[in-house]
Image 1 (spheres, rainbow, N blue to C red):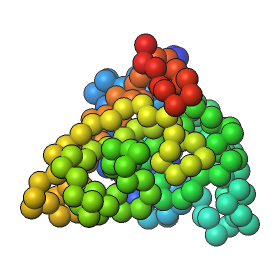
Image 2: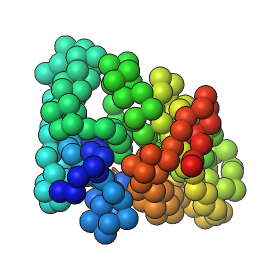
Image 3: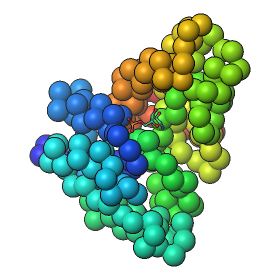
Image 4: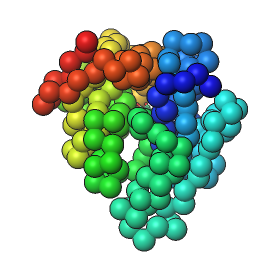
Length: 204
Ligand code: GRF
């Protein structure tokens, strides 16, 4: 393992296609990072299998074993420390992150959301976009702060919304862009090129 590469910890609840894009970028050499650990709140999350296939530690942490959300995040934090994680990447992670993780990983935790924030935060963003009738949507990588999908924006990509779109077709078009910009954003972090100034993320 090359020296000096930042260690990324991914939190994922589901299929893990964004995780896979990150793994692919690491394996291709376009992302100078090490996948330190993948943690899931779902025992059968395909994301865990993707981690194992890459040879990375895959950890299931049972939320039911924790007495509160904060306690659960303490369990996560412990694992992140065991694997010496410098950057936390949320990739389809379906739990609210508490102040326990936010404080430990301030400006060191990213999320991706399938809309052009600040439009359509929260649940069902593709449906929100279609219902609103927007002509353009996309995805956003941002630092995680207390508000839902509200942190400083690192990278965005836009796609057209077509008349015939369903949630599924729009999601598929956006997902292609997610898989491109998430590894890019992590690479910028890995290169030490991101600086947060209030709401602005400056890229050097
Ligand atoms: C992605 O659309 C991501 O933007 C959202 O949840 C979905 C996760 O998909 N936060 P995957 O598990 O990475 O395939």
